[in-house]
Structure formats: structure tokens, C-alpha cells
Amino acid sequence: MSEVIKVSNLYKKYGTVVALHNVNLKIKKGEIVGICGPNGSGKSTFLRILSGIVKPTTGYVEILGGVAGRKARKHIAYVSENDIYYKWMKIGELLSFLRSFYPSFDYEKAKMLLEDEGLDLNKKVGELSKGYRQRLKVIMAISNSPEVILLDEPFSGIDMLSRERILNILKEFLIGAEKTALISSHFVEGIEEIFSRVIFFKEGNVVLDEDCEAMREKYGKSVKSMYFEVFGGLS
Amino acid sequence: MTLEGLIKPEFDPNLPIYLQIMNFVKKLIVRGILKPGDKVPSVRDMALFLGVNPNTVQKAYEELEREGTIFTRRGQGNFVSEDENIVDKIKERMVKDLIEKYRKELEELGLSKGEIFNLLKEMLE
Image 1 (tube, each protein chain N blue to C red):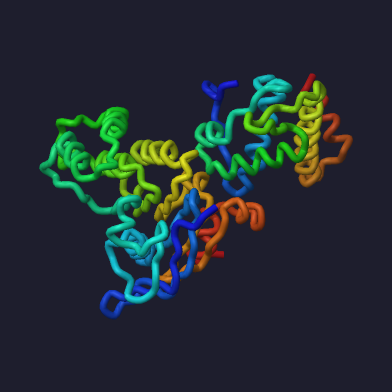
Image 2 (image 1 turned 180 degrees about the vertical axis):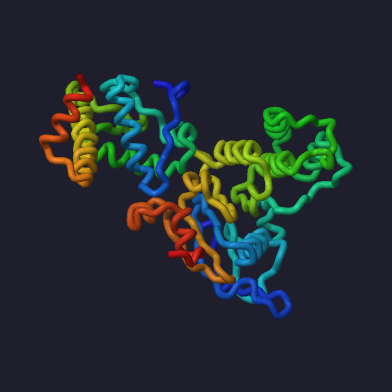
């Protein structure tokens, strides 16, 4: 399998605060990677740099054979934790806007997925609950058929049903299509089965990088138990 | 066969999931849902149904092939072994494993073989 992401000596400083120390890793096509760690561990910074929104202080990121940034962005979807759409926009208007903006946007697919979720095209973005806004973002992101999808805390602060629905949408999109995904999350229960690999971030460093099945086989531990072991400091 | 209507098994995330998928397929064979010579659901369909990573299903199928439960026809996918005794063989193995597991646990509780035997007899009567 070919590598889609190559990160060398990645270092990022915000003012005097070091967000990422020295990250080196490679991610192959088709991998579904869980990026785990507590708040402030560098997960979000890492994903933002991969997306091209944030530039590293030093170091190098190669993504889909090019430097992270505008050119590669066409095939990369980044789903931010924050709200990104105008609150006053109707979902239908947003749909038309994205279609005109991205030539590869699959309008019909997006419409169908929105309907499946019961998202009314005449509703305004601002009228939606957080769970529904999150579903909307994920649907819009995958409707552009990206090769790589970066999701920053897609399950944070939403209801259980939305979480389940988003997981299903992602599974449908990722499984079998050999798409590459990096999903950051500070909890892993119910999600870890879809990960092929997990990377733990702690204070800007990668402290664990393992194939999930190898981890279960070697240590008899789930990603969740491993997380507690690395971060919990208990027992 | 179709996976539709089947109950999705709950996996224990502390144990390798490929082993649990192997067991799931074997149970389908023992229950007669998959018959000798039948086509096994594709890796993609199985992964979607189970909600697991496709690589994990691939690994499970490779192991099932290695132990002779299924075989691959190039370009056509995976099939259950045509050996007519396959069902009995799997069943015997699974039953033995289960009994062995509970015997161990009961012995850990300090029960003797005789006590286990009598208790079992009592319960089944």
C-alpha cells in the first residue's frame, strides 16, 4: 500500500507554547487512524497542519504526494470541531453554494444523506442542535469524495443518537472505498472497532503508535484500556 | 447468504477482533446459515455489517482459510469448505472449547470432577 501522508520532524510553536515537539510518522492509503489524547495534547494542531490551515514552525508534511496546502486540499476534507457554516444560511442554500464552489461535490449524494438524517433543506443552520450541525458537517465533507478525511473531535458534546448516526455515515463512506481517515477523539468506546491503528498524543509528543489488532493480541488490551494505562496514572 | 436480519455480535475490544469474527463465521456454519460450499459474504459486506475495519475481516478470512474452514476461488471470493463433515468438526471443536472453559472456571472455584458431573446431571434432569 502506498503512503498518503508523510510527516517529518514536525514542530509547532504558538508564541512561547510548544504544541508539537517532533512528530515523525507515515500513514498508508486505507488506514483509519484514531488520534487520541487529552485536551491540549496536540491532536487538533496536528490535524490542522495536515489540512494545510496551519503552517508548521519547522518540519515537513507531505500529503498525497504534495506539500500540505492549497493544492492538496482538493482531495482532503477537514472537519473542524467548530461551527464553520453561516447560521443564517438555509441547508439547501449551503448545498447549492458547495456545489458551485467545489466541482467534485456530489450534490445528489449529499441531498440523499441529508434526507436520511431528516435534515430539512429549508431549515437554517442556526436552528439545528449541535448533533445535527455535526451530522451536516460530516455529510458535506464526505460528499466531496475526498481521498483523505480529517475529523477533529466529531463525537464531542453530542447526543448518543447523533454519535451513532455519524459513526454509521463514516463507516459507509470509509469501508471498502479505501479512503484514509484520521479521527481525533478523547474517548474511544464504540469507535475503536473501526480503527486500524491508534496514535496517542501527550503534551505534543507521540507516545504510542500501534496497530489495534496487534495491540489486542500482544497485550490483551483494548484501545480504551491502553488509553487509561498511558494517561490515567491509576494503579 | 445475506447478512440482513442477522443479529450483529457484540465484540470484546480487549480480545483480537479477528478471532471473534472467525467465531461468528463458524457459528453461521454450525447454525446452517452458511452451508458447505456456500459463498461467504465479501470482506466489504462483512465489515459493513459488523462495523469493523475491513483489514480485520480480511485477517479473519485468511485465518479461516489457513485452518481449512473456507477456501478462496480466484476472482470469485471465499467459500465454505465443501467437506460434508465440516459442520460436525466445527461444532465438536466449539463445544469442546466451551466445556473446557467452564470446567476450568469451576475447578478454580474448587469443585472436583465428581461434583461438576453431579451438578451438571442435576441441572439437566
